[in-house]
Length: 312
Image (cartoon, rainbow, N blue to C red; front, side, top):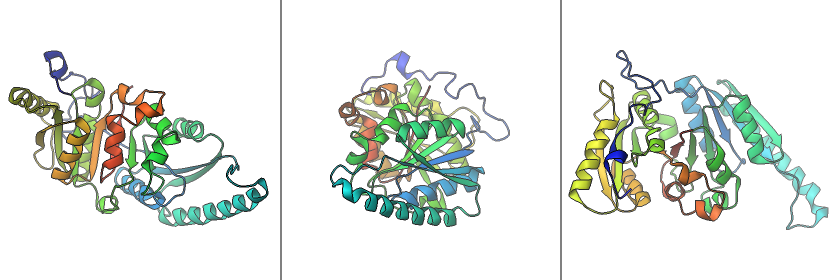
């Protein structure tokens, strides 16, 4: 992100996947989340992730799918004689949480899916079978994004999911976003093609929620010429004729990309961060490498959900 040459700074004409700006609505693309999948382990973040899905469903007429995959009943730290009792206790807990979810979703089209086996393989089948448009995941409680992303299923989701993924991270405040809508949306971009693939999502969401949209780019140093060039390019991302509820804001932050994104989010009071993720940030088979990526750092420290969009 610390260098912008002429090829990299140019905005591709097809950044909105060929979708023209509607003269009637001013929208660059008709982004709709018709089918939303909440992947949950029934931990203490379940309610929050489901409530985000509820808000999407009310705004977009979505069908909500809540998936919980039950791994094999193996508890390696305990003697086998105790496994049946623990399995029964977990089954009773699942039943209780499922009833709570049913109450929360009672007036909305929904389906709760219980699967057994490999978590990602089951989620992948659901994504394809239900034609999922958005996947929402939460962490294993406030204390441990590392538990989730290091050697875990969530790391597989980030590497392999070919749908937008919204993550409610470990320090994301409970806030009011899922009940009152997103009011301030931050879009971070490095001007690469994968990054720009998220542009149509942020514009459409800003229009849908009546939100203030901030577009930002990070430079590693305070070079004035580089910053001015980046600022000019940020303004070119929004197509002519696009109608926004309020004029977009544009900013160039200095420093490492992950720190710049988090700083911009704090300044703009963002309740949603949207990132178009380069494949190099995702397509790695080594979890230790994934831990070092920008997306990992942002999700780990963001005080709001992070929507990642991947260009396939």
